[in-house]
Image (cartoon, rainbow, N blue to C red; front, side):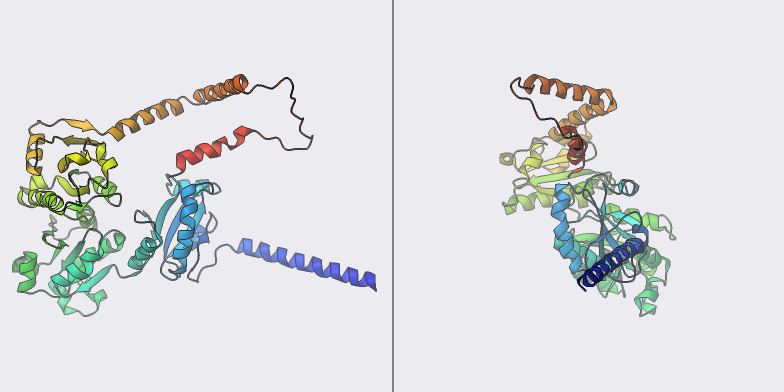
Length: 462
């Protein structure tokens, strides 16, 4: 009897093992299962990502491309997990391990770890906003809401729409045909202006804010600085509190989405922006020089005076001159290290400089106190363009890197030989100590085995 019991127990154990194995195999081959909104982070790979991005229950994805050894990736992981629990049905979060899915990550143009991108309507976009839990949740709610809102007045557009943008800017469209319909879907399709406006709003929803004005009257037209004849044909304007609206002026009435897209991208900033890590790179990447007023924000009168000087130049100078620049303020005390690369010190505030972002070059001369004085002097060739200190350092490092990697594998071999020589010179074997020989079946190890990963971490980790 005892042998029968033993055999029965073994059979039951084998059946359990077989069942669990079959279940694991089934799950492995099942791939991605669509149809259910996610409330946790989903690990994706080359076999599951295509179906995941087509899942109608998860129409918007935030993708994190990472490497397991990346420090910043590890810090971001719990943030994404917490955010995912709050975003079921609004935004799905997926992760791709680039050490395993290298080819997949290359196809997405991943430059560093971690890289965040979002996907909607089959289009992949860089995620360039904040990386806190609240930032991601705010982004998800915005993206899951209608791309175009409805407002009844210019004041409502400023208070309810433009104020939601970090820059305090929004884009407002109107056409008389809107007043003939009640449902927003019918309104948006009622004319060429709002049709194109809707396309662009959908495409740039992550960057900008859009609304349609449902009705127009003399008061609204006066506030917008618009005449009745212009309003009759419809219009699109950029709006910002305490600034005059900027009218979109296409060359033809049947303008394209690309023309409007460019207008929105180029003007989705405050007339005088508060520059910082959040927006400096984005503003600087649009092809215009940036006129920067640097002041101590704790000195309110000083800071406001600099801001007013920038706004005055931007709004009163001829448009062909003023439109060549973007304008912004920098808190010189808070960002002292940043402004020091342009030879600006805290005890020398306020100052005005002009920066060419792509080349990291700038114009500065403390002798010119106002924006107009400095711009005029630059135009007359009286102010020399200089290279920022940080750019000089980066250029040297880049040049050294180009020489080193451009002469591979010889430079790599030279490096290895140098390391071996150093080891032999300073860490040679002691005559009185002989290390034990490894066992026959023991795996061979080498300090150099970890080098590629360490080098990759230094290169990719950000």
